[in-house]
Image (cartoon, rainbow, N blue to C red; front, side):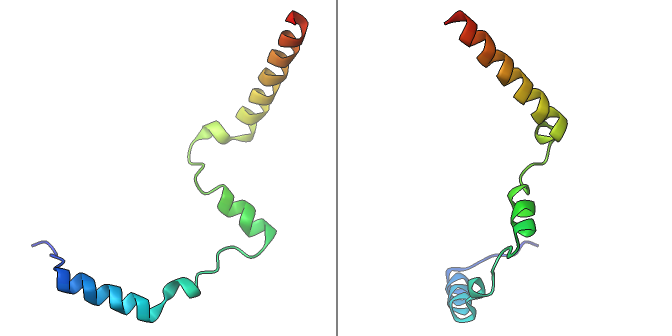
Length: 71
């Protein structure tokens, strides 16, 4: 049995949420450490690991060096 949301139910929920105003209590991270942590929340795979980032930096520097020599 699934839960059916009627237009009346949606209107009631919207009115209750407007009354509760939960967004006023949502402050998010306050400290610099917390902000750094939350900024990394979407990094779920290894392509953002420190080793990969170091390798990419090295490759970019090599490409810039080659481009400078060709110019």
